[in-house]
Length: 265
Image 1 (cartoon, rainbow, N blue to C red):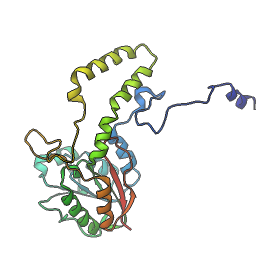
Image 2: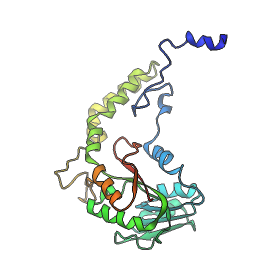
Image 3: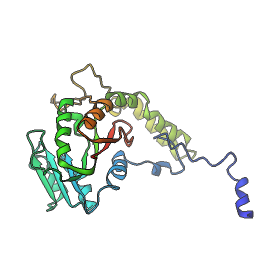
Image 4: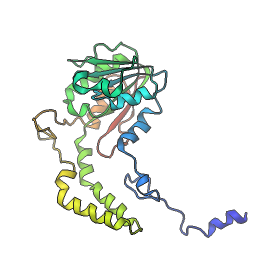
């Protein structure tokens, strides 16, 4: 009791590590208190659901960063569907030859080559944001046939409202607050370097605004493969309309982009 009573004299006002509701809150962990958004997505969306019994479908694997994560989770089978060939994406060079992985080159939105009623887990990140909404909706209709009852899906989409809120909230100021709150003198050069870099290189560091009234948003230097607003409301309605249950319209693992969690009844 004497030991426990000592807590009445420690941390006046109550111990306060930081606000868990602020994605950029400071903490006693310092720089070790921040995860990559990709690792956060992996921790929340993949690790709890992919096991040795799981058949995975991924749309748009690219070089195979997420694909490699599924295989390292020891999934039973992976169908990786992409419009680009593996020779272009260097998929096999990065992932390594693995008999569990099947790479399917597609020229439509029907998921040809993926067996019906076979998929336990669907995932796509950084892909549907580059597709027009009507294309996304056709993909979702095809997806329903491929997934088993009880299967889960995680889909990152483009929502210009959330994207612009991220920019307007000035997440960089939260980083500045974090640096300012550090009391060790070693942070003084870091603060100075950060604010100088922000002042002179902001155009290269900051995200660009997007507009629903513009036909071209975030297009690359060749003038193709930009971003298209689908939006959480329309996307959730389309996913529900295809027959899925929406578990969470946005699981909030990414400060900039929504990730929709859904399930086949």
